[in-house]
Length: 544
Image (cartoon, rainbow, N blue to C red):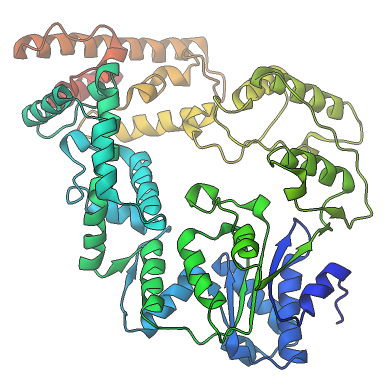
């Protein structure tokens, strides 16, 4: 089947000039089609050998899709197999294997890296005042190690700078060590979150991240493991030592997400005398990994540093969006450029037109109100249903979006909705109800009373089933049933408070908690654990 290309696409596909190509491709411009057609043209028309191709894609899925489209485009499967089509990381792993490094255990984004760090948490020095709490801080460690690798950070110098600029208070260190010695290694998390120690707690962790990075690299070597960054770094080292992969026709897709190490690898091919063609394709406005070090405009670097080698071309016709959407998007993007001349041109290739509206709101609350009015307007149209409405939010966090306010307004106006992508599912009333039932069923078989976090304890109790905690219940209970459940919870909380006072007096720990919520706060985590079994027995008596 013959593929019809526009003038811009044809120029790139059939390009036979002496220079390499830097292709900036806007959204919906047929970028993948052009990549496929260019490879087909080079193989079928120009007679380029399939084994000379190195094609780097963004993901394994994208690589597989490209292979399928090439086969469907009349290139024999046997020829496609001769091409190296993969992600940059698979390519780098191939370099290492071909230069003698085999049997590596790849720890990367599939969760292995987090598990590796947790396994070696003590080896990395994250204990005592450097204690890490939860997956959030594990993620921060991974993020910083990523930065240290990509930007070749002098971590020893960084440690000196951090210790001088963001010191850790000696009183904080002494307190943590003493507390942990007296409490079986338990970290005083409540005190670390107090204002007095908060800064030192944070500073200590970031200092240890820089200190531990060299240890992390040693651990990887020791266990014959490798992460994505080290995979790239070691591959670049092999190329610096003289190894050159046997590819002379290079095509890099999603070039806007190139990081500094990858760019150094690509430069090897750009400067290699035997390279016949080199094409990069992407859109700097769609760089989704800017936070990982890909914020630099490498398209500009190509045309600046290698102006004699590269020709800059554009795929500017958008076949995906209507003219109105393109105009609004261009205006929005242009505001982030120093000069409108730096913005890639965009043309509409679609013949469809839709009215597009945009609104400016003074704050999140007003934005939610405006969205509600639009929903009501659409709902009043007999031709529209609620299921036709989709609301996309950059964040579901109350501090950064109108999400929570909008949900409240939808509920007040009896407008049904379905949330996708919410991180904090425990805020869902229906889920609270189900978890509460499960919790009490499990407790019957649990020989110990399970202590739960304070924010969960406010709803993980019998009153959740009655609506007494201002939560929505799944079905209405009789007033007698509600009273029984509420009384049982009140009795249990009273028993906990009385038991706490007794245990504290007997052990010289003060007068005990003031109110049931205090059970889940403060410095008495050890106290709670010591008499958890007693509390559990009390709960059994109360429930029966």
